[in-house]
Length: 124
Image (cartoon, rainbow, N blue to C red; front, side):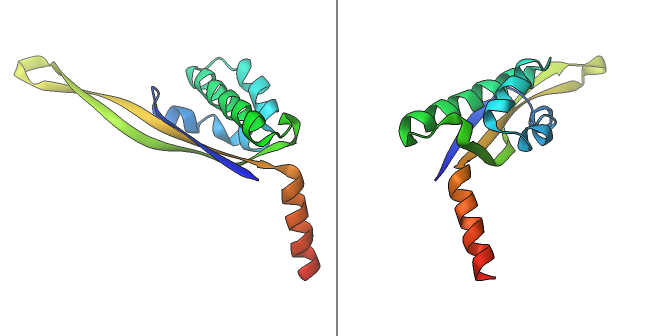
């Protein structure tokens, strides 16, 4: 069973969040919470809250143990931009762009994925 979560307008640029994703894809969601807890980045705190929220929602709605969960997709997309301007030298304008990001998390069951893979191998 899959469950998709989208967290919109997170107050951090997408580039800063994407930097944290590669090591997380290799470990389980519960392990990712521990990994992010000790990371000294602003994005780690935001990602940790989002993953924790997704795990809690899956546990309550699908009645699946958190140890059996696995990441299928972790993606960061560009959100809206907040554009402001500051005065610069000689009457010019200096733009300030505040970037936001959208985070997509898809969690799956390990057991059901293994069963599907066995069926595919048997057909081959």
